[in-house]
Length: 110
Image (cartoon, rainbow, N blue to C red; front, top):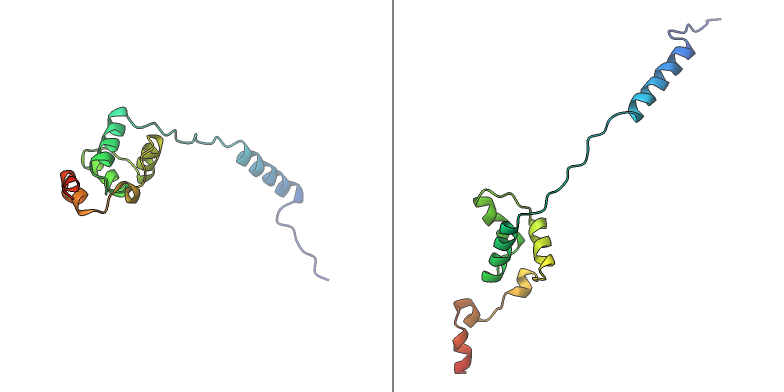
């Protein structure tokens, strides 16, 4: 009858396991990144763009500060607009030709 030979004693394997578990649970975790709030100037720029050009969506508004060197996500743009109660681009834009051409006085002629 063949007998199996042990390469490692069970006590040693258990000791390795205990050390492994101890290292895993005492591992120092990195802190989660803290997201800083956007500067007031950047928020004002986002709000101004949303009001002046109502057809721009989050992605377009997000791209403009990027050209100036500010990195802003579309989600941050959305949050700023929600905080200031500015609706979505599709709800902000008017589909009439007079509003497209900026001819608000044309409405009064009819």
